Image (tube, rainbow, N blue to C red; front, side, top):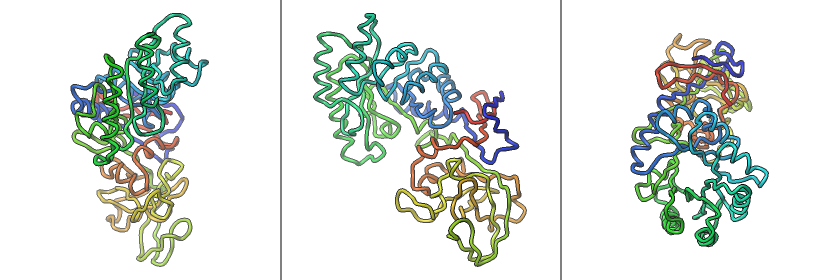
Length: 390
């Protein structure tokens, strides 16, 4: 099935993104198998990590997911349209009393991050006497959102007496789950184990994508993978989901001693062939992929693409609309105008591309620009094409 939403046609696009929904489902099943007997929810915030809630959520629901987490209520509404019967938790909590009615209308479950939010939800539910579910978020060491341990203890004691709230989940968030040996992991696990005892009889959740890999002690009743679903982390049974490519619009012959791109940062040491591709940092392909941008941490060299069976290095500075690749070592005639070079996908892993850009896979996924022509490979084996889904 083909869907055109933004007017970006394949014949007019410079950047291309292929999203494999079958791989997305496979990743869900692999993570669910690893976390069992804990249940596996899916975090689909930031428009399903940039891939489109309208496409990703139905595929995940078809694979067996019945619980989703989003950051903000408007995302929750989009998930509700895509999965009418799902449980949907809003991690950002409540925006105030005026927003509570919208949560109730869409059957969204607020994750309460403070005593103030708990009071707002309690007050709203008391107006019509309807018990509506909520989740309780307790901060165990990240210092971002969540009740303190003392606040959680007081809330649990008060609610045991009044029953004013109907919590169905207690949760916390790991700050260093992607660093298995970091001592904060164990401290958070110990603290959350104490928190769970305060809220007996409801589900408990601590592990995100990285936390699942820390082992069964971290799984509790419900795990919440996000980026791992979308191919942003490697691991047993996990597959790439997104392939990003760009169209070659020109091939230039550059002599030794001449420079390429802004700042004359790349001076050719030999006569070279350079492919100019129609995608740049406006399309989410970071300037730092060139190695001559401003990386977030120290890196060596720049990024690579893949074309004609070879890795080809990014050349010079990535610009707003174009990226240059050195294709000198590609056999003459193997690449021509109109062919595509892969930025990341099955041949250049997204983690490798992110490291080369001095960032993380999360940022590459969520930063995909609005000028891509998107192709969704469906679970049935059919493919649908669309413009940008955001």
